[in-house]
Image (cartoon, rainbow over all chains, first blue to last red; front, side):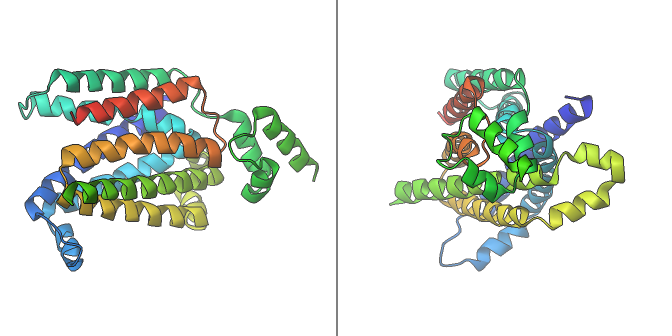
Length: 164
Length: 126
């Protein structure tokens, strides 16, 4: 993990939190949308809060894809969930909202989850060597019975793929 | 009727989010580490590889579906229920789906992290 990679994870966290809060603010202004009036969904995009929210979410998406190119999905998602904690802190200290004890507990659990996953490896090394050696469908047949395939199975699949 | 709509909306969001995340994660693994590629050849080959990847477009379509179902559900239900409930269930769904479809090694550490975050997110709605 380099400093630049930590910066990418921070980008995922901040852009998602900022984008989501702007979207929710904008949608509150737009009001209820009925399933029978789909075009009104396009009007919602004209709301400046929704528009800025979408731009921020695009920035989130770029950093998210960047992170997924070098880390596992099950690493990136918990590692970037710190955004919820940020949102709660903004609510407490910038918007002076009441944060209940139960919410503080939630914040503590999320922070704990982030610390837990961040201490481990970012990527499943062996499985991805397999991805590079085999086409995804070959990998699927090699490890049929999805999810049950152990690491040994994958290593065997990789070596048989290399022989081909 | 309204709570039923809201929960149906939440499940639709979770489904599309998980499908989108898995497809995008698979696409980016096929593209490879962008930091290493950036050092070798700059940005344009990376964009080329992403835009020629089928999983990327399918993933974006699924994420767009998740996004519009979120917009819909937000206009029906409370943001304090819809957003955390969908996010919380998406964490669990993604951990299962990443193990099954991406063959990621979801060890005890990652399960605990996913559970802690999912519980924490759910509590934020309380």
